[in-house]
Length: 95
Length: 485
Image 1 (tube, each protein chain N blue to C red):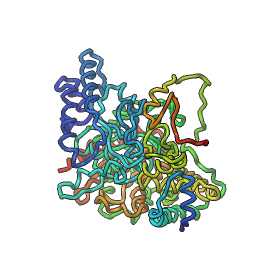
Image 2 (image 1 turned 120 degrees about the vertical axis):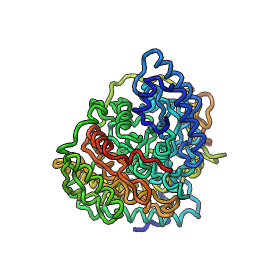
Image 3 (image 1 turned 90 degrees about the horizontal axis):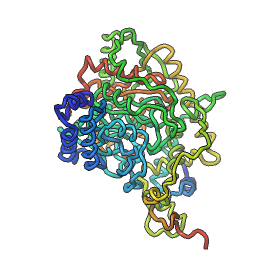
Image 4 (image 1 turned 180 degrees about the horizontal axis):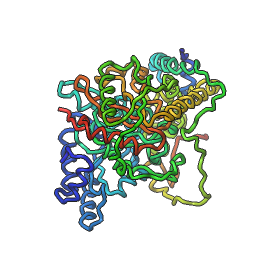
């Protein structure tokens, strides 16, 4: 199993991780090896097998629609990289 | 005092032979004097520990002490601790001080235990050697006397090494593919990964949510039982928490094992296992026969597919979970972002280490358009086959026994060049996580002076039985009492 440079670049964009040119050859090798490892799955007979998402086959539990948490904006924003007037700051998005 | 178990320390405190302040001081001093050679702690919370110890002594003086009151322990640095840095072994969270407690953290606080600090781990729990930590590798106390720097296993390597080095009597840990059992085995201590959903995941930094499970590490099975008594239980804050009654895990430790039906999965005694390791595991099984157990060979026919299924499911879930680290609300942020895209991509490129990035990329690939069915859906189907193997096996036997790892602790750097070589370290532990059943690692001998672990796997929610099985073994063996030189 191989993974192409183009695939790696595309996946890096989807994952929002910047890659430098010199990292790509090692990733081609490592990701290729990992995908070869997982390729064993294709040989397994899984006809009529239901996918298992949760080991106990539990379904999502719903709670009553009630307010249970108090507002802790100050505490939460105290650990943010940049805030102003109760807002999170990011670089300008709309010119 | 540092060689005593949690149960013994609890009795010493109760008898008044030592105060929690004195005991806590002793462990803090040991960490200060010795941890430079192991690097098992990322953060030592000395001030808070001493304050908690003082409060515990006052509680005891008022006649309100319980089992854990004033007993020191440590948290794997994956459990959020209100007011104390919680890093998950990553640069991304190097300065993250959570504004809340994980449920597990809150439970230990309520029990009156004294947290000494936060233990080192593979970054975001991704690793089997503790070499992917941003805070440097952990060195296994075993082998050090020969001048060898060996890995403690991972990802809970800091917790395991700290217990082996007697820097703490117990520590919390987590297990997604073997991260409690493998380091417990490599460091010669006892560890338990409970049934998926038994211990709350709230405030436990997520890696792969359908596999992650918090658990226990200590020297003895009895101490693991004392820990699980504090940790287990339903938590409405965790949507996958199991709503089932919690037994007193110490109540059944002394049940006799006569008639216990032990299964040996033949796939776990394969040629990947070194003959010397196999001998130790078989010797341990013989001890169980002496205790009245009957032993038969069983089969987990799909176990060989576990690594492949795991390395689709775990990275896929990790890629989704770790998308939250974007440099906006908390954690690391790159300098001078040019625009929003630059903020995201550079923050993540600089904040995550190599193994974490590899897994995010693999997971993103497996979930991307055109590949979802072939990888993720296929892996989930194989996961059901693996689960069915365990369900079938437990129709005939009470517990399964196997090795934990294919070889004992290896030398640092030996397996870091090829991720796949490292992944195979978990060949005997991963299927358990996919099925969601509980399993333990119990010290069961030595190969070349290095500890060997026996894996004991139980049916769903049979932690009490596992602890009983491990405790009885520890009444007739002393592997768990051996000290690294």
